[in-house]
Amino acid sequence: MTVSAPRLALAADLAAIEELTRAAYSPYTALLGAPPLPVTEDYRPRIDREEIWLLDDGPEGAAGGLSGLIVLETIRIM
Image 1 (cartoon, rainbow, N blue to C red):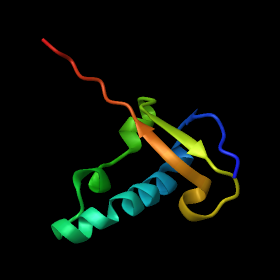
Image 2: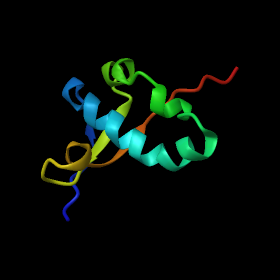
Image 3: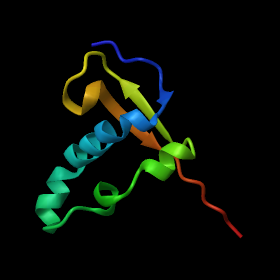
């Protein structure tokens, strides 16, 4: 498997991001009895703000060919 360099997420990646997030948190969803916050988050605004980076692993398949995602958060310390 060849993994590409990270790239910014595009609006067209939304479904794959949601699928990958659901799969990553599925053990916790079963354990908690409800999906954790990252599973229910609307990722559209984060995509628009260029806060999500993706790793593609090649052919379209599970999660649209994504092998990972990184969500950047800005924290202001006062």
